[in-house]
Image (cartoon, rainbow, N blue to C red):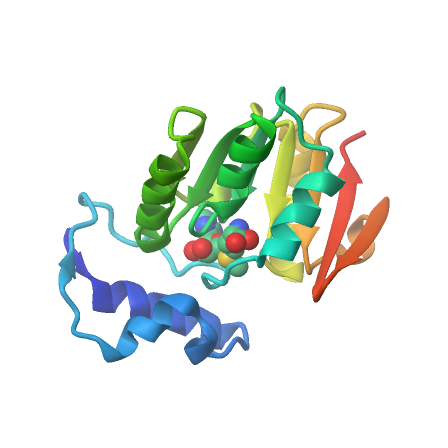
Length: 199
Ligand SMILES: C[S@@+](CC[C@H](N)C(=O)[O-])C[C@H]1O[C@@H](n2cnc3c(N)ncnc32)[C@H](O)[C@@H]1O
């Protein structure tokens, strides 16, 4: 089924509003005032609205997440809800890691694939369109999140069931509430980053 860009933007705007974000604060929604050409999504219709809207982590947050997780060349970094792919691209470009980005929104995923090519890391990163709750996480040694408190806690059983012992989880802005206290918290600029290690 073909979906127009308008449908994608409306879905993101609805998700943003449902979560209390300002739709006009979303980078992608600057396009709302533009004409709406059709985007072909290879027959993949939206199965449900994204659990959180597309909002990017700033440069401070990206750097702090990768540092706090201690990312190195042997790591495989999964960003669940990867948006434009900036975290896994930075992990590959700066540390020689491999990366997998998963997002259900084809619009930022298109940007991610183009950015990986520009950064010269397309052979080290992979972007998958899909629901992060259905992804196979067993290959990850580092997981990065910028989601919401509720989504983090809903994801926690899956993280603990699928990630190997020693895998690091870093989350921008949102912790796991009472479900799991972070082992370390750092602040960099406006960003707060939380770290956990899978026992
Ligand atoms: C706040 S953005 C974070 C983007 C990126 N990780 C970053 O930090 O720059 C959250 C992303 O999660 C995606 N998302 C939300 N719910 C999802 C789900 N259930 N499965 C896959 N992606 C999802 C959204 O489309 C959005 O791109």
